[in-house]
Length: 299
Image (cartoon, rainbow, N blue to C red; front, side, top):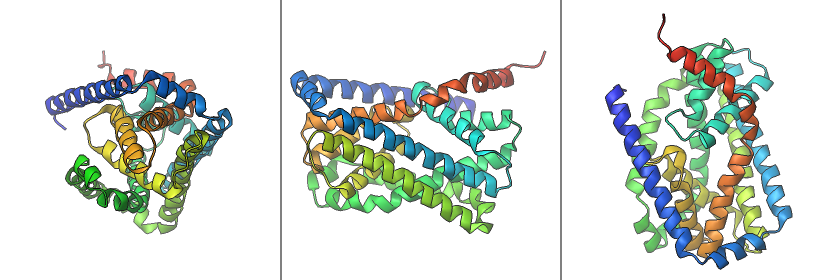
């Protein structure tokens, strides 16, 4: 991408992030602080702890998904190093809301460790694509209730969602060149994706149950998949604000929860993602140092 165009895109994404966060702040302000505090206090601490545990398991599935792709492409990387790079990428995505994405950090870390750049880059693209493919399986559970609710349909820009999915698929199909000859690795990666998804859905389910609110697990799967695809639209950095607004809207409109409960769950699920990415803080400094050294011009 042209550096000028990239700068313009980054400015727009920053503006979109700020706008989404402002809207989220307005939503929080409009909700009674008493209602939000009541929703927080109503959560059984045991359910929240279980949510963290289940989310950690989901991170393990993410690690295994990328690891199997790397190993099947003949990258001789130990599982512990894959875990280190994955956690670092997750941490940077949550705590470095800049143009330095988690995948860039993972790629830089892999290169720093001496692994082939081209293969690692291709594996990251396929890793993302498999994650998207997995979410597509859950999407009907969200589309069906949305399509049956005209009010919800008007609020979601399906044209943008479909266009984003189509463009992403077209751009990344060539990345499968290595793994098309190894279907077992792709199938196993998809299984790990389903494991990751199941744990994320379970975390949201546990938070709702912790408030004594029952919502169908499969409806949660569908609503989260819709939220996932909304955050793929490049209008916000790392989906900040957009994820919370989308999930709050869907849970309150289609999940039968109050706005305060939906907003609380949306914020807590972000907190769970942040908590379970903290192991990456240990490895991030060395990778950032390598990135800075690479950017310095030769003397």
